[in-house]
Length: 241
Image (cartoon, rainbow, N blue to C red; front, side, top):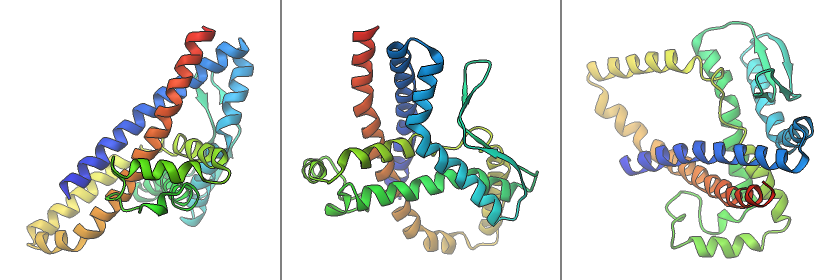
């Protein structure tokens, strides 16, 4: 369990940094190529549009399922006055921490689901297993052989990269996570005080470990895809810049 948790944590942190490098590199390359920030922004937003639509649609669907009124929403990216980019938004009524946290986490959940479908169903991971144990340095050459034989490989890789780079929640999406985490922590502490800690741990240990392995495997693979893109982006910056 500890190894799976460490792998999950490490892969998530690596994914966050890889995404930052990829986004920064892509923006710089587009700006160097087109020399106009408006044109560069247009193509940058266009490339990420499928992931943005999935992200905001997930917020919208979660709000509808939880019966939270949506005030307004947009899936059209806009550049702010400070130069940052807002890809889209969903504004809802103020509700409790639980529903706010669920709405904020919806893009991550849908992104993981779509990634799993892409990686498992279209990118050949099913040939070596998906539980994380089979995804090792020893099985990587086998996976690579199966991967390059995949029909429409470029399209599936593009979707996987776009989804993985737009699924992480924004700071606004995470606003309700800390209060909810404190509530859950208090609940766990109460269960331990009642003496049911070992029984509860035994009950959730196996499914939790399996889930962590699947997530860690997905995060590891998408991080590698991002890193594969970072190198050519850096080379283009060096040549064009």
